[in-house]
Image (cartoon, rainbow, N blue to C red):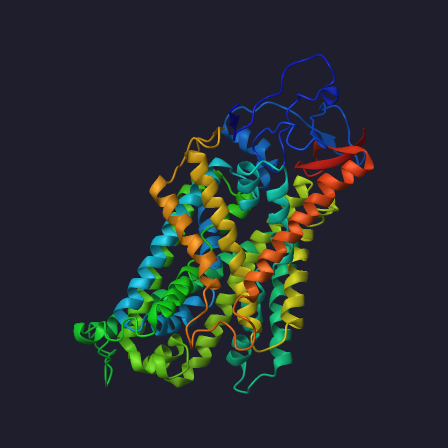
Length: 570
C-alpha cells in the first residue's frame, strides 16, 4: 500500500479511537502514517481530543487541510513560534559552513594537489558536490518541512526494523560534540588577538569553554538576541571575505595602491600547473576530502525548519542563496591568496594562507587582527551548530525515542530547547576540557565529520530509492533534485566513507600518534550503541516484560505536540 509523506485523517467511527488498532497517528517525529505490524511489541494509536494525558497535556488527532495547516500539524509548532525568515535561514547555513576552513585549508589543498591550477580545480569539484548536496536536502526539506533533519528522513525511508534507523541516528545526535573541534581552537585565536604573549594550554581550553558556554546561555535564555548575533556575525564574515577577495583582485589587476614589490607568478600558465599530483594519488584524495568538508553545512537549516516561516518557500531560496554566496567567496578568496602570496611561501612558511595574505598586504602586525576575525568566525559557527543540533535533540525527545523525552521536548523556561542545547553543551565541554593536546583537534574534527558522511550516504541512497520503484511510498515534494544529481551526491559520500580507510600517503597522516582509522572505529561504535539501545528498549524489554509500547501524541502547554510512549500489558 502506498504511504503518503503528508499524512491523512483517520477513519470515522463511533468506537473510541484508543480502542482501535487501525487508527492512524500523526506522529510528532515523522510526517507519515505507520502501521503497527513492523514490530509486534509496538503499537501506535490516536486518542480522542477530549482525553488528557497524565501530566495534563491534551492528546490530539485531526485531519490535514491546506499547506499551512498541514505544516502546523506535521511539526506541531504554532505559527507564532516561527522566527526565522529567508535571510536568517541563509545565515544559519552560512555560519555553519564558514568557520576556520577558508582561512587555513587552502594551504592544505595546495600541498595535496601540488599546483595552483589543480588546487582551484579541487575547489571547483568541492563546490559541485556541495551544490548536489544542497539540491538533495532542499528536496528533503520541502518534502518533510519540520525540524530534525536526517532524523525525519531516515525514519521516513528506513521503516523496518521500526525505530532502528532513528535510534542509531539518536546516538550520533547526543554523543557527538559537533562544535568541539572549532571551539577547541577558538581560545588560541581569541587570546592571540588580545595579547602578544603565548597563551597556556589551560587558558586556551578555558577560553574555548567560555565560547560554548556563552553560546549555550544566549540560545537558551535570549533566543531573539542569539539569532540577531548569528546574523550579524554572518554579515561580518561575508564583508571580511569580500574585502579580502576585492583586495586580491586589485593586486592581480594592478590597481594603484595595491602594488607589490615582487608579485607572485602563480597565474602564469607555465607555472600554474607545475607540480600537479607531485604527492601522488593518495595526496590528491586527501585534498579532495578536505575541500569537500570545507563546504559541509548546507543541511543546517533542515534541522530547524519548524522555526522557519513558510519553510517550503524559504528552503527553495535560502539554501541556494547561502551556498552560491559561499562558493563565490571561496573561489575569489583563493584567487586573492594566489594573487598576493607565492606558491613557495604558502608551502614553505608553515603559516596559514590568510596570515601570509594579511602580512604581505597590510604588514605583519595585522596578524592579530586576523586572529580576531577567525575567532569571531568560529563564534558564529558555534552559535549556528548549537542552534541546529539542540533542536535535533529536542525533536528526538518529541519523538519519544530518548529517555526523559518530556524533558528534552520542552521549550521551558525561556521558549527555547534548553535541554537539547544543554546536552550538546555538556558533550562539547567535556571534549574541549578533557581530550589531551596534540592530536586532539584533528581527532575531534574527524569524529564530528565522519558520521556526517555515513549519514549522508544512507540519506542519499534513500532518496534514490524513493525516486525508483523499489519503495512503494508516495513521494512528491514541491522540489525534486535530478536523479543524476542525487546519484553523484551518493557516490561522493561513499568516497568520503571509504577514503579514510585507505592508508594515507607519507606526510599526509591525519594524526601524529593515533591510528589513522581511529575516528572511523569511533563512528561505527556509536552505530553499534544505537543498535543495542534499539534492541533493548523496543524488542527485548517489551518481549520479556510482557507488554507492548503504545505511542500517543499530546499537546504541551506551549501548543507544541510531542509523542508519549506508554506501556500496555499484554
